[in-house]
Length: 140
Image (cartoon, rainbow, N blue to C red):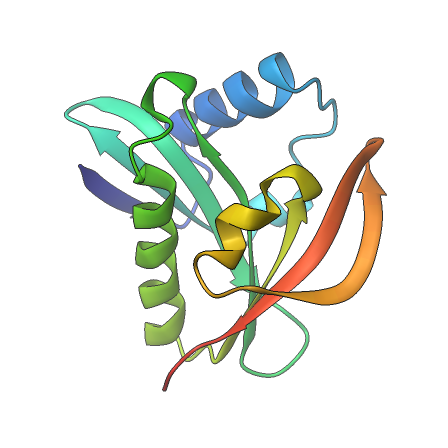
């Protein structure tokens, strides 16, 4: 697997997010103004885009928000999401980040807990889907 980093929203990221969030999960407001300022990471199996995430600097000092983490169905269960998260964490750390926050679908909370993320105590809904805010302090 190869991970590529983009400073603009690439078509491969649009394809994955449309496939996972819009077609599979029914979200309607998938793309937003944050896409224009975020760093986008796409993981490839040869030339096939298989996973995506984005991250951007938060208003809180040394804090980044990571999100829009998705893996194409055929590639799930192969630790690709964990590998992509690890790559994103390295990039955030290199950019000076000391803390990462994310807004996770409640049903995938265990995925993030396995990677060292903790609940921040805030639960809410995004397009009717229960979400939780989580965070992780990076070793500096």
